[in-house]
Image (cartoon, rainbow, N blue to C red; front, side, top):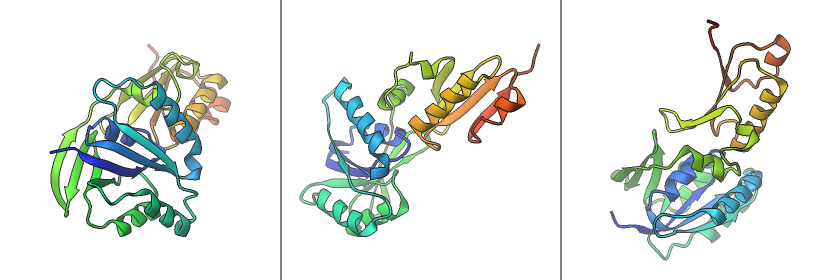
Length: 227
């Protein structure tokens, strides 16, 4: 399938779909729209793009801010202004609030639509028919760098990175006894990647009741059996 000119999409709390798209070589240009609520994510992604070294031709990547999610009428108009219809383009419908996706689909009902299926499999549909699919590959380290961290960052001490079977980034911290600093680092990682932007796991031998009660509810806790 020939590369199209531009793909338009929304940035979400998870950076994985965005990274999958720009590594897919689907288009020459990618335009991502960030709501005001994700302004910090936009800054982190801008810094990532400035230092990114591409193995092949570097795509053009444009980032826009479109206002808050709840302001539908103004957001609808902003999306209309951003999308250039005088070219071959497609819509990436993996990220974004439902009302944002609806606005984009209503404005452009007939253009190709791109989805990211699990695990990291990109599918392009035209007139509801699957036209192309491909598996996208990039490293888990790419994900954390796009969120402003390096593998040796203190927040990632005793933490392993990998994609799970669904293609989600999985952060697993392994400690003997859970401390306040361990919980604090997990909380900071959740703030960086989003509550639903990654899978968080804590493998431990012992945690006091006081510490246990401070662990966020979306962290999978696995107690190892003592030998």
